[in-house]
Image (cartoon, rainbow, N blue to C red; front, side):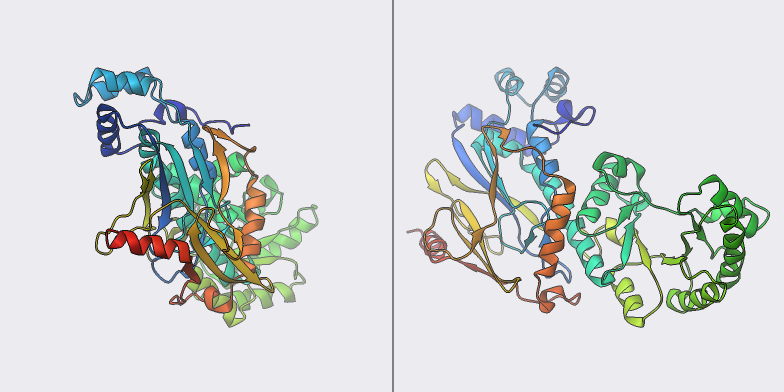
Length: 451
């Protein structure tokens, strides 16, 4: 069963690639080279202060592989470039992805140097998939990994993703919402993502709503009466403590009408100090059930500091720093040829060497904690641990229905619980528990010296 495609996705599937993928494909065809080959996708390094990754984006990647085709409009556009021969354009007309894919399920904890996904297909098909696979896996994994850091920092307190307005485009906004929820966010503010992926949606109001009314009190009352389901009132438009007092008065009036104010939100100032003062005020007013939510330029460090301070905060809003990738807003992901019909292939460029052969990743845990991973040759005997890469496509078709986002979210939750305190650290610098198997190490050694 295939997931439904978004409008225009099938038509655009083949064009979502870099020019050099197409020029190489044309050259492969001219050479008569369309034999199967294997490419693997991994992160060269974690980047920033990350100690681990959360694999994500597989659903998007598979959707794109299913959509790999060139319709007549796409072929006409390519023809207008004046670069491609008619026989190549004719070849593309009938092209579909017919290969197999192995991948880490979404939500799996991963480390640098480990294949997150591998593709075996006729080399033209595998080559044309590079750009959109890196785009899907790289961006989703980047955001999920950043979101996981926020989840760990929150230490069980809820947080909401609301970075769409600062995301780098509409596709990035919806992808970030999905990846954030996968890695622990309680909700997203982006309605489109909520409806598309089944993510809870949440939000409050903007300062403009308060400013459009004669007073805060009138704004609070009007908003709650119009939107009576769990209303949250923004109280820092003028003076936060005074706003909290007015919100408490409005909450009591609304309670008499059967409307329960769910929370108040602080978006500026010394959030920890103000949360304490607002909590005391609300408790004294007999409103202990009103939650305090905070936002305003928060990232995992800001969340962790507020939690450590003991501030009475029930939830956080995290936006810009999350959806733009944090302190290092990219993932150094690569997609490299590792085997052809002639055998294993290895790149030996300084600083960019690759490991040869088709690989598998094996994980060992003890007492529910990750002990280590081994990157091995696929099928290599005697490797301890269970395999992390699972076959998800064969002959261009999915082997199973799309996994639910909730299943990936639960896998991530369990994965985060399996991390040692060293790997959970926000400070980075923890050595990834990854080694090479004897078979892979020996093959790489032989190929490195040209044996």
